[in-house]
Length: 275
Image (cartoon, rainbow, N blue to C red):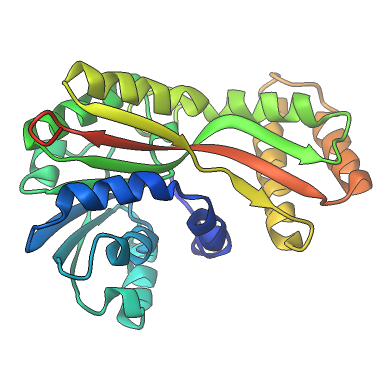
């Protein structure tokens, strides 16, 4: 499980444009009136969550962020990024190098007033998500989870092999990604919402779709490459026909970039003590 810094930089603008601002506004309302807040960002990458969310929590808040990331390359890139990022200027930042697959979540979340993650839980298995929900309940902290893929990936104009390719990508997404067994992939957000509700959380899901227009060829190519890479794994494992990868690439090249919608869900969970 991991992400390349170049991919994180490429997707950053689409992430920002897609996020469910209504959930962020509700969260800001719940923390309004506080003087300080400690945020734990799980799978923080290079700190994009802080850059996006810190200004939206309110200028009156003294914010302390613990950025939890296992990849030292991303941590190094994040330190360099936040050193020159205006949004981080008034935020106390601490990096915690930890592998969420094996870390005890309770001490990681201890003292958190808010837990945040981006593009994380669709890589996780049921047991890990249950553990996270339990740790959040014990911490009594609200959680804002952004950009969990929900299984939708729709090109316009479409190509004949798009549906088979996306179905294959979803199947690949359900493999073990190193976070607690076979990942739930597109089913992760509703499953995690249910786990939180069993602990008494008030949970809201909202769409946060990427909309990638024809003027973003690099993002289109990255999406085609990402899907094709997953299909190669399936073909190598005998789980997909040998020609699927070439046919998908040829179909997308003939159709052109056009418009691509990638479906995501954002999640806001408010614990019983704050609901």
